[in-house]
Amino acid sequence: MLHYHPVPRVRVRCGEGLKSIFQYRQFDRPYRTSLSIEEVQSVIVAGGGGSWSYVDMEGGTSWTQTNTLAMKPGWWRRLLLPLVQRQLLLSTRRAMEKAKQKLEADE
Image (tube, rainbow, N blue to C red; front, side):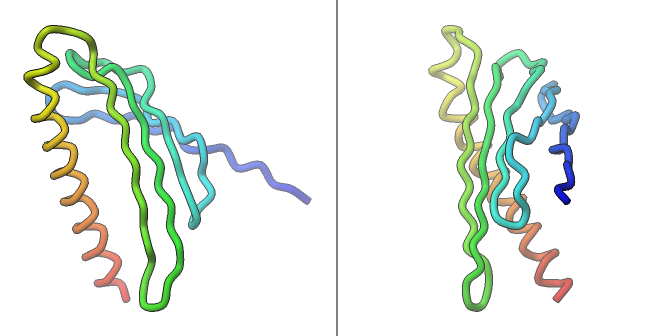
């Protein structure tokens, strides 16, 4: 018998006034997940999404992440884009380091 499991839909409130819905598109844990960013309320962000894949390997897990962030049009976009890219990279690295620490502490 097949069981239907709805994919998560999460309301997110981030810094800098960003509010949105993270709608998972694929939720095949523990192998891969993906989501789209919907119903965005932001001055600079129009939308985006991401995907994650996990592969068991000897001694751990190989993890791959891809992010997309669409910015609203405007003259300021060229000025802010490098800052937004750097902030996204740094916040992703911090979040993954924190997740790694938690997972390793549970072992």
